[in-house]
Image 1 (tube, rainbow, N blue to C red):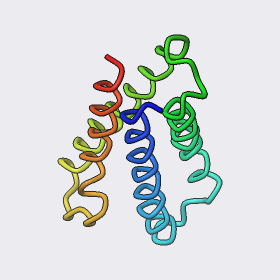
Image 2 (image 1 turned 180 degrees about the horizontal axis):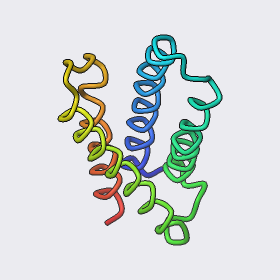
Image 3 (image 1 turned 135 degrees about the vertical axis):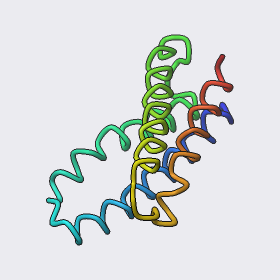
Length: 116
């Protein structure tokens, strides 16, 4: 077992849950379709599955090094996007989405520190 990657998998699952709660509220207010929300969540769900498999050593870390780096890059860019989105919002952010960037950054930091 690789504890660092497992922690990253649990944090990625927390990000997924936070995003689902945020998008569910927005979809009810703005009429966003459920298919669109499901399409946004596919990369997140796949990242959680891959990180869990790598954490339990079902994937060889040497062979999937690039895949794990790509997942870390995905979460880093998502954190930067959340910071930008929160800085340009006129109304105060919801309490849950205000901390989403921090959890995404934690996924990136834990993931990079576990295999670099």
